[in-house]
Image (cartoon, rainbow, N blue to C red; front, side):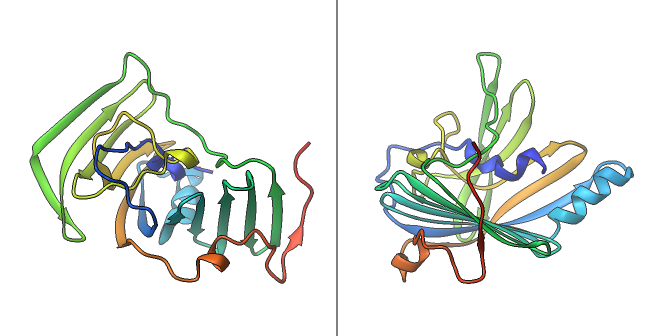
Length: 214
């Protein structure tokens, strides 16, 4: 799996009052930077993909959809310190319960040598929100963000945000493993319906439960 699937994880809370619940969707585009079979296969998996995040106080749901009918969903319940992971693929439907309340992600390494450049004069509008450019340069990545200060979504409780990028990212892009990935916000709401079913840890009908890793 391409490491930058969870590129959005390194984003920051602001001093604004955080939105308590909502829904955010990113569309994902991928371009191959060379013609090798491995890179072309990765691009094929990422094309027409999407990332959906549902959040409420003490709850979160992350849905990642890839080409080839691959769908991965993680539901977090901080009140119980438990999670449910669902995999729907051509190989079948599988569910795994966990006692952890954090996403299993690949963090971006940021250290004292990392650099953040903010370009407030470079602007673009995404979903009606004014955004400015931010570039993070680290030992492993160079990532370009388009951030807004018009609202805040603080997902740090779920290890989905961090504190070194100013503003909330409406778009971001980077290069990893020969693939250029771009995430762009395509839908945003600050209210949710049917929260009980959205954040339920019950295994859906048709899924096979597998044992957690030892």
